[in-house]
Image (cartoon, rainbow, N blue to C red; front, top):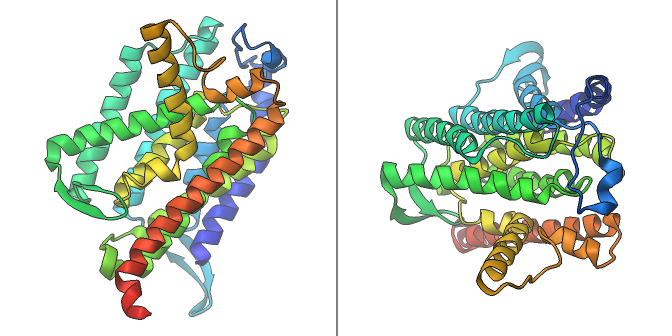
Length: 352
């Protein structure tokens, strides 16, 4: 429990202190956000420093690693101690940092071209393919189950090839879904805090009930998720409307990669659809709009992703953000509730 608090606190302090420094550096180099011309209400954001996701990623990794160094414990007193880093947590860091690097190159390309066009789909997919291949190989070496799962494995073994396809799909889809959602100040930082918080609870419970779930290293994954929680909350301090800095694709891709990695490593792949329900809604709105417009020549929404639809209906930006945070909190709570209900039906029924 102490390691969870340490990682979260260290990540929070690092991000909240380093973000103002990042803002000054980014402004000095004129690295700012490019805004679509049809988003008239967002033109004031033109030039706001972007690539803030670099600070988030650094805070997450540093907070996690620092929590493994202990100078005091209630059982042994004062003394220097280093706890072991788990293989699964390293895999999750690979997903966070790897997807964050792809997002960084996307952001940097926009900056270099001075317009809102980043990496080509070919180069972005190639990067995602490399990250997915490394993750799938590492997952196999770490003994991660290749079965399709909801709150636990469903008994459907995908095998190495199909599991690699699932890893590629989940990393890519989740990163892109979070990226689509990142259109309003603080929307992703706030909503992802609920998802990371949900995974802290899930993985901590899995570590306590290891005989039932069989996931070694679940506590270390919870420590990493706690660092992510602290990092995004601290970034939200500076990213809340009106934002002083924007996380950019660097941040949204890293957050999406981390969320997908946690789902894959904890056997909660399909549960992610509920836990990250807000991102699913945003993505589905885009798909529906494309299908409707190309197939029938009509738009379902005024603009997608759907948060822009409500803006064009007259909702203030802060109203959209807070209401979407509420949706994210509800879906995360439902996901945790389903996870716990499954345990109640299992060993929990024996305890009762």
